[in-house]
Length: 339
Image (tube, rainbow, N blue to C red; front, side, top):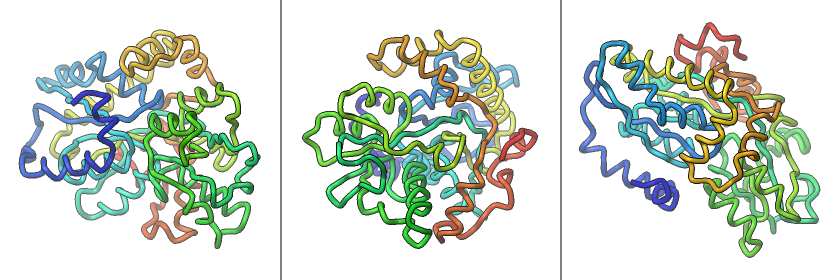
């Protein structure tokens, strides 16, 4: 299935494909020879893009004595990816903190999904084309906010946290009725054409920067203003897969580490690779500028997760709460200076 076709199918069609594939999924066995890894859209997924292009998983699996390969899928939205993983149609998926803690809570005591590693910390902007909206307090029932998944995506929870700060915890869901689930590429197109119901887009790089170059679009909320610097994208897997495939799991963590290190040392080459793999038409200098944004960090260390978790628990949208951030991750991440 091609990149563009996956984008057009969207979450509902992919969910149907997941259900159709359940009956044909290969049974679990020790040290499988093939794994399925999903990534989403945007430069936040750059470490996974590097892993795919450079075949780093295959490299480290071979070093461990296993001839294994990774099949890569592009699936927009961590929530859809989480559903595919639960259905047995992915071994490794990725997405924001919201989908991770949701799947962690729902699979606790069954397949026990946990984080493998963070892959970045980056700000997420809520941009609008409505000249009358200077901040979120100016939003009205006529506005529609596109984001990856209503209520549970990192953007949705950040909007809830911003509403709680402004109007009190009892009003944390004040803007939920204005939100619409839409993938970032489609949401940017809807926002910029001006003829759509979408008047705002809570997004990630590169889309947020691309939108701000269009006259009339401006930012009304930065996720860092709500949480401070925070992990935006995480890679996760089930304990069932990790326990049955310890060598392949180790190969994955080593591949992520190598990809992250390479990006941080080769920003221009990383930007060029992103453009080749994503088919984005953005000038390479613009991507390099984004990668050099001091607010963007490619790192496997989880940052500032518990503020997000504690907010969800305080507002009743998360019942089972990890004692520390380490409870959300496999032991390989525990030595990192996370929070």
